[in-house]
Length: 243
Image 1: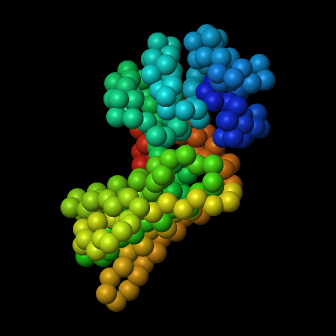
Image 2: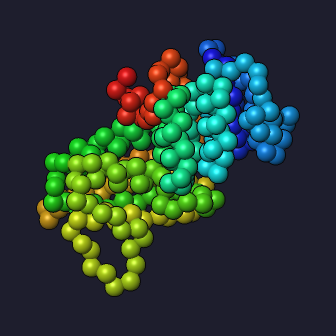
């Protein structure tokens, strides 16, 4: 599989490049970044050589250029970038009518399994209070994390009446059908997500803790393998788990 990495100069792009170089069935044929890092191409359009797959660890503002390139070249793409606007998500959905696209708020298979557990517990305890606390390194820009929202969405699938309270503050009594989501930023934490279900008699806490950023690159590689040969469509970790 010949792979293009978009955002090769970032922390995740660098890790992914190292993994691909050691993977027998994959070959890194091009890296793209607007900084021109280490001989990389400045834009996606600058590379027109052979390729089977694009893996994106860049920035959501480049969504349109990325999906346009992949549609034009009929290339599957694994979107590991998060934080897309509503307009950018529409661009992704439109492109997925023509090419296979893999999109997940978190590329960890472990997080995908965690989301399954969250959905199951939410269904079994319909009256439980649900609180989510996510912790990341001080350099993370978005809050709450895309993964925290992904886990909240999993609970909401089981309990559609739920609504989100982001960063509760002030004099505000907790409402029965809310999910509290709070973000902590400290040190060099890769990513920890805790989902707490509390009833009058017991508490269930589901925790996923990432120890190394390489797990997200590993997930991207798994997603790329999954996507090869798939028809046009928008796929996610749930599809990978069910494959």
